[in-house]
Amino acid sequence: MPYTFLPIAAQANRPASRYRFPLFLCLFSRIAAESATASEMLNGKRMNPWRVLGRDTLRRVVIKVAGSLSEYLMSVGEIRKGWSVPRNHELWFRAEDALHRKTRLQPGIYRPRKINGVRKSVLKLLEIENELYEEFGRSSTQLADVKSNHDDWEWDSFFLMQHHGVPTRLLDWSDGALIALHFAVRNKPLPPKSNSIIYVLDPYWLGKRISKDPDREDAKARWREYWKKNPYDCYEDEWERLYLPSDEDDAKDPLMATPKIPLLQDSPHLTRRVAAQRSRFMIFGTDPLWLVKVEKERDSRLVSITIPASSINRIKQELIDAGITESVVYPDLDGLGRELKQAWKARR
Image (cartoon, rainbow, N blue to C red; front, side):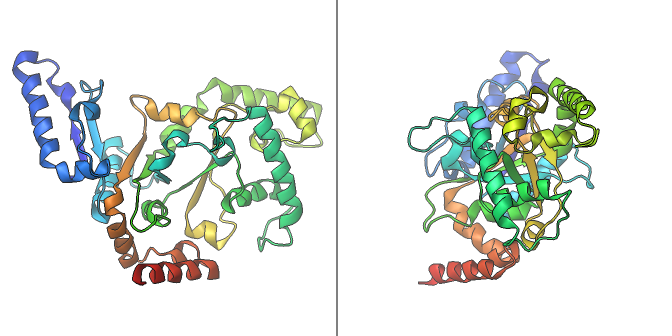
């Protein structure tokens, strides 16, 4: 069973000695009965029920492990139902390797060095990002087959940087559950040696939360002051430009400081690849761990689904059967080549 929800709080008004202890025994029995799925979650090691329960058992217990395509989609459906997300509202999905747990939900520019695990200062990383941004803008115009006007190129080049592997403050998501599942299993070795994690986010919930943050009002106020001083260089309602990489002059201006909290951005589908992957972007501010903190909150609408290593090969085949392949996600000759190479590796 991929998704287990136990409303333990419903027993709170009953005598503890009569109801709560049997309830815990029922939970242990349920976990034991599903030991095959539970053990897969930790690569063959039996789960400790106390570790699963943690200290929040008086509210609820949620266990999400998907060992097949159907279990994964069932989990997504249960999450949508549990959050009461309307059918016309999308969810966002992001795949990561469980090996990178320490850097989860952090954009590439903010991930510490693998050698010593030390992250440079945020100011230094912002400086490096701007240098990469300027070089990409200078060199990419001859290489990119993208229709973008001059006014949009500042943003378009930023999104293209991220999409083509340059470290930035952008954290990419997809509004396609199966696209994220493909990314969760596509680069795993044979046999897979680690689990994959797919994060599920309610962007509407997060957007409302961000809009109420004092940091957002501060950013808009600072931009209004900047616009008053530079009315011919920008527009009054372009405060989102504070999230673009800053050049040396802007970096010295307190009014142009990068905000702390992220910005959710529904970027245009500049290329066939961006469109095929149903890409969505979250632009981080100056707090690398902001989203990790949100994930840990009690009522967070950011949760994860574990894909056990032992189930990855099965899910790869199920995705192929469903038509989700490398050449679909990467609709170009490189994608087709990788798809055929994957087929060769599976048969050799």
